[in-house]
Image (tube, rainbow, N blue to C red; front, side, top):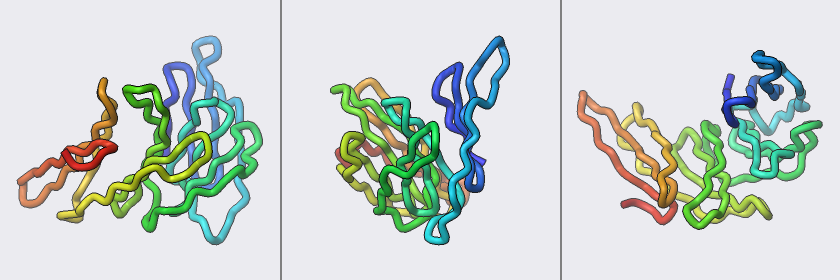
Length: 168
């Protein structure tokens, strides 16, 4: 199960081959959309989801493929393929110059930045994995997206800072 918080009044939940859209109504969250996606043997279960900037589409992480779908119906619009590992994180980032990107990260710690107008790949960052207990901390800063990649090994933690331009 993966939860994507849109704002204080809305969120999405993705699980297996379904996603649900919740809205706050009269101080209670209600499921206003429950969409079942047809199972595709080439894709896995939904592992990540985010609402796109136009508020009518969602990006779904299905195995190693990002599927762009209509929010209301789940109809497939486009598939984005670049990742080798299973998708773990999807989110929308607004840069300091007000450009929007879809950012994706998979289990092999590859980060991709996607154009939201034509769904093309803008940039790919390969993160060196130093241990099996690696993790990501994703943070929006005033200037641009800052990604902290942490490596934990025998109680020693190393941090690498990345931006869309690469390693800092």
